[in-house]
Image (cartoon, each protein chain N blue to C red):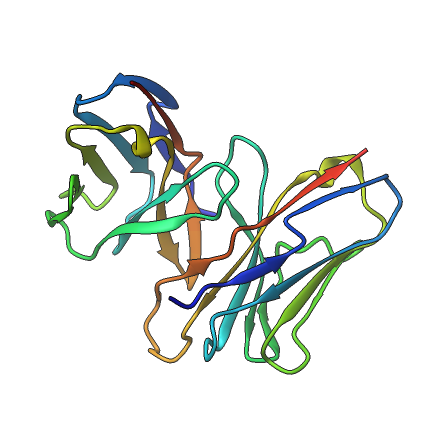
Length: 109
Length: 117
């Protein structure tokens, strides 16, 4: 399947800080998705991006679809304890979703 | 809000035993997916159903894994015999399956965490 590389692999942040993470691919995607997975739960879709250069927000989350269509970025502003979890990027290809390995976010109160 | 249901939530078994997981998708969703998520990795698709038909099972280890969705509603994933390397989270997801688009929003269940001893 498609190889999606996420960075950083993990991060520890202070409550109130802004967080940035990214996802890159060797192949072009026409759609980029960002999911969050809470401990012991299934992933939940946060943001979907459909056009190169698109910038989309969902509350304190903002995601961008890279111009090259080979990358995407997710930002979390003013982090709070419930932002803890694993954030996955994903891209559909031939009706299948390929997921990155995730960025684990831990917030220090 | 409609949700994807999975059971059991946790399963501990010994290697060479048989295990089965059950999924009930969101009502009306025609497409159902089974994923395996190994610790520290993202989910990987095992099998996809459209109604009762298998659309893609290219990543399903068919020597030991089987999946069915007999009436096009709920689904069962079985492993027989289980091996140590099967320890993982098994996620079920569903989508409407009616848009005809390349991709639809997939709604995930809470997963079944399997530990093989």
